[in-house]
Image 1 (cartoon, helix red, strand yellow):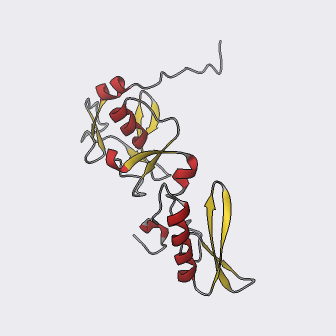
Image 2 (cartoon, rainbow, N blue to C red):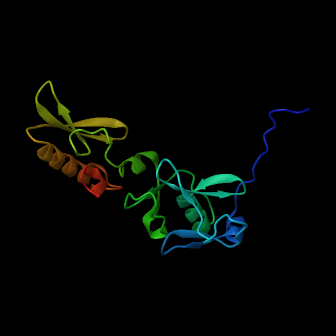
Image 3 (cartoon, rainbow, N blue to C red):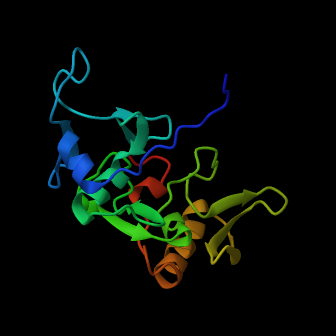
Length: 180
């Protein structure tokens, strides 16, 4: 009796994907072409994963919907990352997707929920009773100064981002704690 035998799953192709799913590039939605039993009653494909990305299971393997959108449209899986330009992980319109390196993808990150300052790129320094602005460029943190208010520190971060983050120079609304 054999144990721990891994079945190698075939790499999904564009033709195989198109045989199972339809993709609307204007809405970013996938729908099943074949509906089986009670699964996918409305034909809409995908479930929201714990990381906030839509996932679709094809041939018993789970894929991120944005990567399937890229395959469906361009005929290949991207080698690196796919960035959601507007930062919305569920917006899989092809016009909202672009290839990105890890560093480029990190330029479009949302604020960490544990940030007490309320702004991306800003921390409160208790030892100095000031707000410090900082930004990462090529995996290195760059110090941008100390400020009396979080808003002033955030302005320094935004200015540095415009200059240093050429892939994504503007701060998305998700950069603010209170933004929706």
